[in-house]
Image 1 (cartoon, helix red, strand yellow):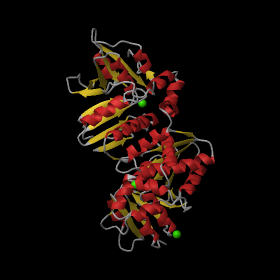
Image 2 (cartoon, chains in turn cyan, orange):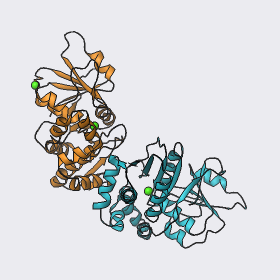
Image 3 (cartoon, protein in one colour):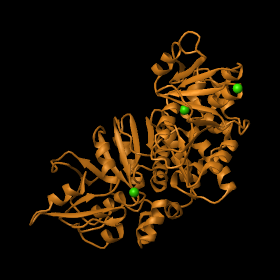
Image 4 (cartoon, chains in turn yellow, brown):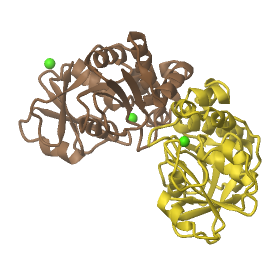
Length: 239
Length: 239
Ligand SMILES: [Ca+2]
Ligand SMILES: [Ca+2]
Ligand SMILES: [Ca+2]
């Protein structure tokens, strides 16, 4: 079995893909499902999300651009905000700067697509291991096509869990992620030292950084389903 | 001053760019100049290199694809092979899998372009620092669009030298490279554990890996000149 870590989304995924966008898309995705949401719809653009909302639709819209809310959206991609709500019976339509794009790249070729954060890292590793037949690719969303320390650190956490579960041949991306995980401090130190963590803290969103640093506190793994989803969206449910 | 490490070539370089392809393009480039070559011409494709060689031309061709020699080329991108030759009065035309492509990407926007390896790391850091007015971007060539541990390690070596020379704001790429440098073992251990280092060793090129692990043994820094160069080539001379 191969274990591969793409420090930025690359493509050509033959088997299992685990997408990581710790600050904050995949952390918030886990929280929406923890708080009862039926499903998440990840859209390629904010416009697709806005067009899905018609009168009486069961959709709530969550998203951000550069850490700030998107006009017309209900929620701002904040795990702290999401944790204070009840989403039972709702579907949350998500569009974020990097995480949703990475999911659409992965879905072009991957067979099994999961979303992972630090908060569900152990459960995500177990699900990935159970589904994989040849390769697990952990894909870091990054920030505007630049590598994000927070995502690489979380990839290292997943890689460490996976290596404890069985034999893998690993690539240089996995070697780097493991080195960052083992030498980058505890999760809050790693997230707090990242460029995007510092940016969010300056925006007054330091509580989100703290929430995203919780390690394996959830067993919910957002999982791509091939049930019908509106055009231009990917549907994830709790797995 | 900003210090940025791109773990893969990205583009949009406003100022100084230092290109790293430790195994083996930039290590070999340093060696050609050490051994007396007048200049290096980095070509975008092998065909451009082959077309430059006409009867009586002063050009020698060096290059590889996937670690193997290119048919019709004189040399195979090997620092060990280059170290045993005298290139005085010659210009070496180079085309390699990743390093020459990274140089062409960098040249699209960068103002000052240098080639760096472990062997000239300290000299390259000093040259970059002297030339920079706003940003030093260290660009890892990688292997077929995947991050290469050997390049990230060398980027961390340069970053460490630069941080000792002055104040920089650093990005997550630099943070990751520094962590890999400080925790990835000595240069030979780091190169030997990389996927490409293992590949070269399997091809019987382990001596090249050993040569590439020499730290700051040369003061030559291949530097892009805007003297006339044949179309489709970038001309580097010893700086
Ligand atoms: Ca992010
Ligand atoms: Ca290389
Ligand atoms: Ca000379």
